Image 1 (cartoon, rainbow, N blue to C red):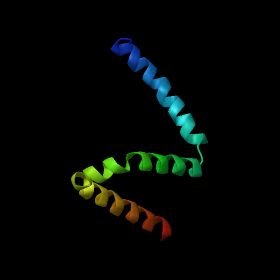
Image 2 (image 1 turned 30 degrees about the vertical axis):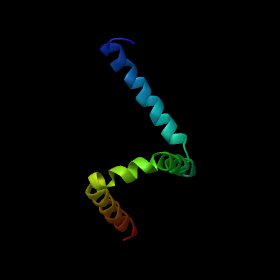
Image 3 (image 1 turned 120 degrees about the horizontal axis):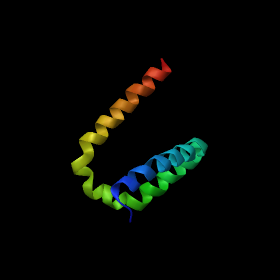
Image 4 (image 1 turned 90 degrees about the vertical axis):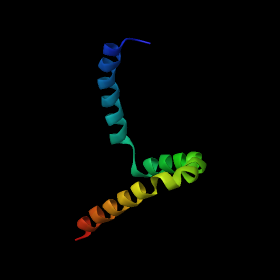
Length: 72
């Protein structure tokens, strides 16, 4: 493993590559990946639901408000 400056230098390249991948990934593929992750970690999500329920509800409310703005 390289030193910290090497890691920082390579991080910019990784972020650029990640941006390119996100640009070419379709909505369907993104949803498929999300469903696969959801399935893989479902049991952990259920075990930790009580710790994060408020955050999830807040995020859902924010998303609904943003979607409502798009509709109006």
